[in-house]
Length: 306
Image 1 (cartoon, helix red, strand yellow):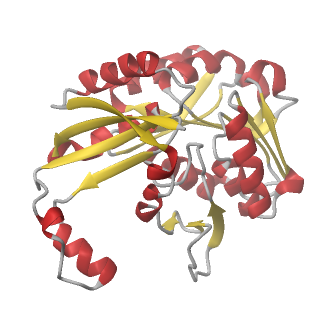
Image 2 (cartoon, rainbow, N blue to C red; image 1 turned 135 degrees about the horizontal axis):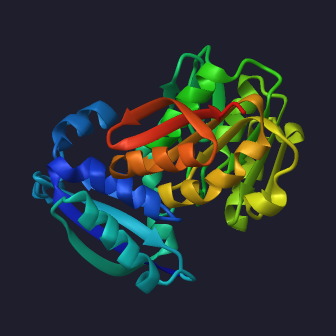
């Protein structure tokens, strides 16, 4: 199957912004070409200082971020959204598209995904990596779904869960993706979790990751949206999606929250921070903490009294 490779070339100083935007827009994977510290990386990874000339000739002052679209996705629908976000960020960039075979990229991104410690208690570990730690391990293979822990929005949510999960909670994860947030909550001690996503592929991936982590008996993952799938009230609700979706979601959240519940909203680019804060307040939610990391925002809310 032929996929579409959308390549964004940016000056090295804009690499993190381009990667973050690509990650949030893409339903598939991303792959990054960055040769700025080639010699150091070659030594750290392979302990060699003999590097092919073809790699040595690569430009060091630019970074190429590749975003991949599945054969059934229409680039004409994705590209305008992607371009709008790039333009809004104010960075310099060049946009190109090509066709690539699935096997060319599906495994390539894995070399950039390694075990990482998050917060005080968690470690996120790829399924193919052996990582010795005393922390609570979340074993992940995100497949085609968003949520590895590497993106700022995901790590902000995981750090928040690490702080607030005490044990016995009922959790709802809206836009569950890989299921990483719900799985983390369960492994931190939550009693049960529900994950909702409109994408059947994500639901399948989340279910597989739940089994991989031994929490499948406590995690229900469903295809659909909040309006027809959420049930009852929850101690913790997470939504690591995008600003516009959080604003649409906000009116429905308070009724799903127990009296002392917390709503964790992320996937918010810093340019929309104030807009989202005002939208949450207008819908009966009281922001009690705002966290920021490299241009991304996570907002923690409680339900307004009265």
